[in-house]
Image (cartoon, rainbow, N blue to C red):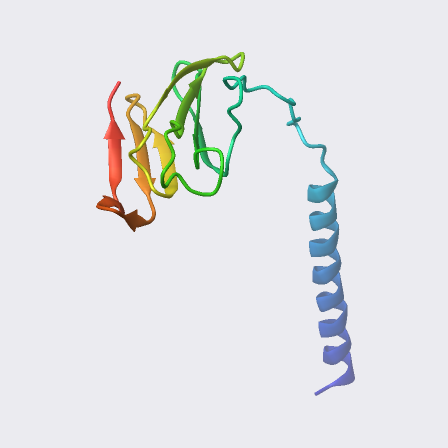
Length: 134
């Protein structure tokens, strides 16, 4: 290989790596437009969030959360894992108690249907997809 061609390849490679590095640094340097609002969700007395596996916002601006009944599973729990909050964090509704073993997937579609999945099976429950219509 000619020394000139080798030098050109090294210079071009260095330039490409430098551009990628600079672009990546600029992307990470941007400020985060989001901020944490502590205690936004107002849960009933004694209720705490477990592993929250899904959060969705519906067309009305309500925030839905799907948690594992205050822990890592809903097996044996009487707590409602599907929680609906208004935009100020006030609990509007909760449902699904006794239906889930291991909440796993969650979404709210454009028609307001709530979709929830159960990722484990036990005692004749679980391994299901649920659709709750408004």
